[in-house]
Each structure stands twice: as structure tokens, then as C-alpha cells.
Image (spheres, rainbow, N blue to C red):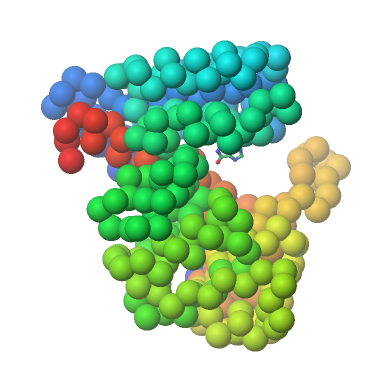
Length: 298
Ligand code: GUN
């Protein structure tokens, strides 16, 4: 049986339509819309393309979007002062500093300077701590893990009591998604195992998974024999494995051997068009949440 495809492209559309609707209602009710600032330092092509997409998406849902581009040689002190300015701007509900930053700037210092209540990336240690505590403490979930959980829920996958295996232990995906799935609540209550490069028998763990989340950054790491028949497979990997000569675009591959895995899994995310498109949608959701809290609408 061929797996049902969980399309991030489609789910993103649904989420953005829901956000747009809420923004319109907010505008009618209180005459305000969510404000997001994206700070881009320098002109790295990858960062420019990410930020352009974030800006375009924010505008498409009706946000007040400020694209604040800064030169590559901005000093750390000036960047911190800029963040302080937005921390104190009541019309800005979300602050995003695009990473990576130039070498002369300390990423950690910059991320830690963002007001945690405007930290829509959820990278600030306060938000990492809030996620660990769970429940009402949580203000923002990190965008990629939030997108993964949303896909699991919207695909109708049962999470309560499910065996979840997370391949990878990064701060931005593996660790947070593992904690989120283990928490009490909707789309969670799972039994979670984190596996990584030092795990003795990766295959044996993956084979137990009702929900397999792979964020290892290794193309085709997960073999079809490692997948439990009927499992939900979420592939977070985006690996550039070559270049399409005709289109000039990178050929992307996930961490799962998709073509063969889809014959065994119950539900599976493709690459591209899976988790990738969800991340920016969840950034918009966090910005909306922040605005609602600030404006007393929640
Ligand atoms: N650079 C690559 N991905 C991200 C992200 O999710 N947030 C920020 N701020 N920078 C990034």
C-alpha cells in the first residue's frame, strides 16, 4: 500500500488562510494588526532568499512587516541597540534576526537581547525553558518543531501513547520536538526516544516507531526496512545532492529513502514540499499569538 502524503504546501495554505482571517478580525476589533520586524545583516544569498520569503508571507496575511536590512559591518553594539529599539516599540510583536550573523557578532548575545515575549523564533533561553515546563508557560514554540507537530495532528495521526522516535538531537529540531511530543496535551502524550550518532542500533529503534521524525541531515539515512508498516514518517532533512542542469536549481533529498519508504509507511512527508513550507507559517502563527497576547485578545 502506498502511503498518504502529508503535504506541507497544502497545510501551510490552510494555516495562512486561518491567520489572515484572524488578522482581519483583529483589525476590525481593535484597529491594529500584528507587527513583525525581520533584521537581515549582510547579503548572503541564502539569507536574502529566506528573509524575502518571510517578508512576502507576512505581507500576504496582512501583517505590518518591517524589513530592516543592515550592512555586513554593523557593530555588535549597534545591532544590540537596534534590537532594544524594537523591544520598546509597541507596534512590533515579533522580532526575527536572520542567522547566521557575521563572525564579528556573537549570535548568542544578540538572540538573548530579544525580549522573550517578542522572540517569535523561540530561540531565547527563556522560551526554551518555558517549552520544557510546558502547559500555560509556553508562549512560542520553535517554528520547525511546531510545524512538525501541526502536520502530525492535521494528518489525523494518533499521538497519545504512540511510540515516537526522533532521529537527531539538535537544539532547533530534535531536542524541542522530542520534549513537545512527550508533554501533556493535544498532539502529544507520546512515549519518546531520541536517537543520535552514538546510538548503538539505530534501525532497531526506528522499527518500533509509530511516528518517526528524522532530522539528521544525512541523505537517505533511514532505509525502508527500518520503518514499521503503517507508521507516520516526518522527514525534516533538506540535503542538496546535486544541481539540475536544465533549471539551475539544487536537487533536494530528505533523510529518508522516500521512494521506497512510501510503500511501507502509512503517512509520509515529501522533500521538498513537506516540513520546509511549514516553518514560515508557524513564524506567522507565533507573531499572531504575540500580538493577541499584547493586545489582550487572548
Ligand atoms: N536561519 C536559518 N533558519 C533560520 C530560522 O529559522 N530563524 C532564524 N532567525 N534564522 C534562520
